[in-house]
Amino acid sequence: LSTAGFLQIVYASEATEPVAGALLRIIETARRNNRRDGLSSALLFSPIGYLQLLEGPSSHVLACMARIACNPRHQRVYI
Image (cartoon, rainbow, N blue to C red; front, side, top):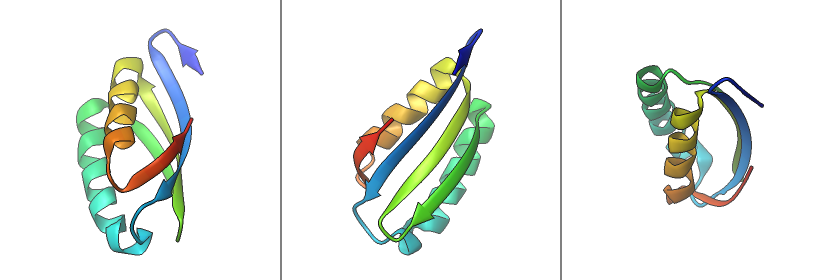
């Protein structure tokens, strides 16, 4: 959904390392970056991957997705 510079994206990805071990680092980093960039998000996870909703200013959502796509904790990122 995109409305006047606002964008929502839902993505799914497979984890490349155990999710439980990375979860606290992911949450801490996401909170800091989301606050800085004016993003809202909801993260669901399982032992094998992630499903996340990101929303906020379009340029910031797209920049966040670019970081996620390059992050070695994710593989096979589907939007």
